[in-house]
Amino acid sequence: LNEFQGALYARELDNARKRAASGSVMEIFAAITRLRQLCCHPALLPERAAESTDDLPPIAESAKLAWLMETLPDLLAAGHCILVFSQFTSMLEIIEKHLVAESLAHFKLTGKTPVEKRGELVQEFTDAADPSVFLLSLKAAGTGLNLTRADYVVIFDPWWNPAAERQAIDRTHRIGQQKPVIAYRFACHGTIEEKVLALQTEKQELFSAVIDDADGTPDLDRDELLALLR
Image 1 (cartoon, rainbow, N blue to C red):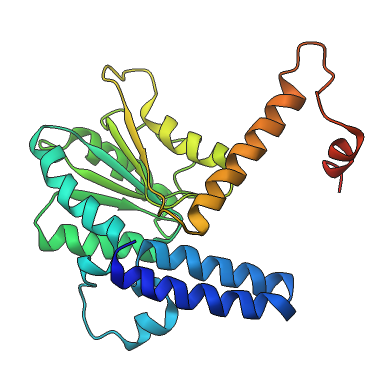
Image 2 (cartoon, one colour; image 1 turned 90 degrees about the horizontal axis):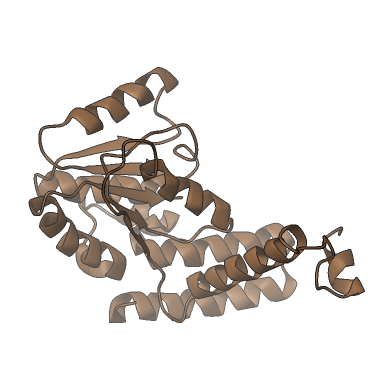
C-alpha cells in the first residue's frame, strides 16, 4: 500500500476489529470485504464513492492501479493483449475510466453483459487489429470463453477460491494458443489479501491431500477429517 492507502487501511482495520468483537458472521464478512475493497482502491468504499465528485478516481490513491496503468501501455506497445480480472465490477469501471482517459483500446465483460453479447465481445477482442485490454469480472468470465488472443493475465484482487482464479487464467489456455502466458496475481503486503492467499494455499493443500493421495487415504488426523464435514 502507498502511504495514503496505508493510513486508511490501518483505521479501517481498527474499526473492523472492534465490530468483529461483538458482530455477527455477516457483519464480520462485510468488514473483511471493506478491507479487500480498500486494497483495490479507496473509491470502492460506498461512502467514499458517494462523496466523490471526481469522475476519474486518482491513480495515486491505489498502489495496484498505479502499477497497472504504468505497465499496460508498455505491454500493449510490445504487442501483448491483456486480461484483467476483478471480483469487484466497480473496480473494473474505475480501470475502464483510466483506459479511456489514456486512449487505450479495451473491452469489458461483467455479469451485466447480455449473454448474446458476450460472444460478440470475445470475437471483437480476437479480431481487433491492435492489441487491447479485456476487463472481466471473475464470476462472469469463469467458464466458456476462449481468449487465446491474450498472453498476459492480471488477477487484480485475490478471491477465496483458487479454482476460480485458475479457471480465469485458463481462458487463455485453449487450442490455438501459441504463446507463453504470464499471469500476475496482485496482493497488498501486510493486508487481508495476504491472508486470503494463505487460505487459498491451505485449501489447495487440503484438497490435494484428500484427492491425490496414492492409496486414497489422506495424511490427515481424525479432527482434520471431521472438519471437512462441518
